[in-house]
Image (tube, rainbow, N blue to C red):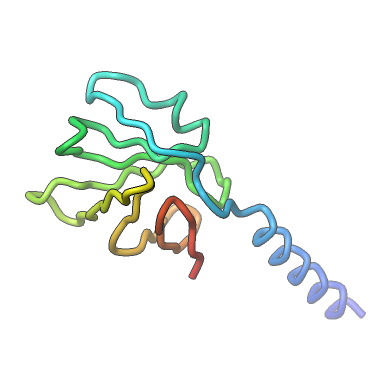
Length: 117
């Protein structure tokens, strides 16, 4: 009986975690290096930090809603680094995938949409 209850609890927790996840971001914001990107991050936007044509960081709230703010390095001289492609409709795609170590989330960002692994 205990095993049945434990298995049910595990299934409910997994379902709840998938249900809570975000499916996309509301937009893209550009923020200067000396400005605070917190308002845009809390508005569920992807925030490019730095100049519009040569951003240094991509910051956003983790889409699993764990509360972490993820910062992806976009500078070519540092490792690990990601690349951002700006789409004609104003959305962003990020390459390679994002693997958040704090909460265990793993996903791709394609046209501001989140594709979960």
